[in-house]
Image (cartoon, rainbow, N blue to C red; front, side, top):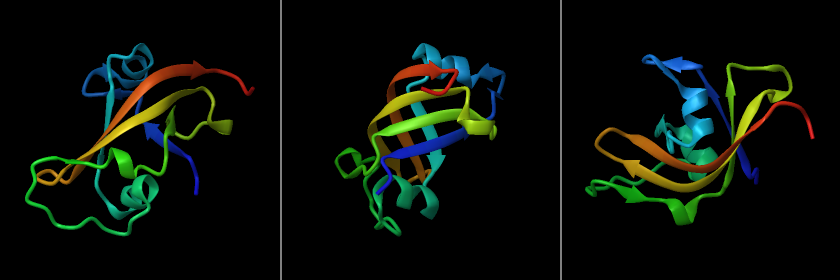
Amino acid sequence: MNNLVIFHLKRFWDGEDLWEEIRSGRKTIEWREAKSYWIRRLLGYETLAQTSQKIVNFTKGLIVHKTWFVVGYPKNNLPRLEADIVGLLYYPKTEQFGIKIANAKEVIKSH
């Protein structure tokens, strides 16, 4: 079981600098479509059961608790932002995950 997930970002989205928003702590939720890839990476399931709930809290079922954010696909994943995954909500209506993040810090060179 891998305890790390990497999110590849576009630096700017809709006029916002996503890197800076995450680094500063202003952006605390990363959105991803609830496709089978993310279901397996975050929860270890193959699929999600149908539900009539408006929001499903999967925080207790998370199998990863650390994340890296990188812009594009840089060599050695540097520079990157390292953060904790502190929550996972599923929104069935839009079929999206809201991945709650905290404690983002910038890493410029290898440890």
